[in-house]
Image (cartoon, rainbow, N blue to C red; front, side):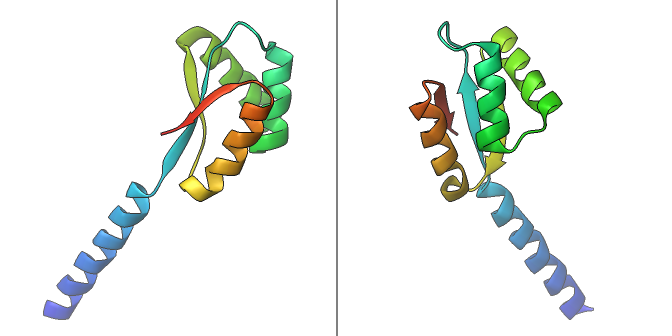
Length: 93
């Protein structure tokens, strides 16, 4: 029984470590970029489906920001740079 408990503790701690490593790529609202541009770039850069990109663009517009992608910093950083290069305001949190 001790081994089973020990195994569960290890599994739980591994899961916790994976969750802590997850970051969010957040897009902020601006007065410069059009809905169509934001939607196109979310599809192109973040691999969103059209509906998902449209919904994220609406959330950004109404709430001021939206988490558009989750992953490790190393996964999100190139996407953040690509979105910044297109004039979007983004942050990895």
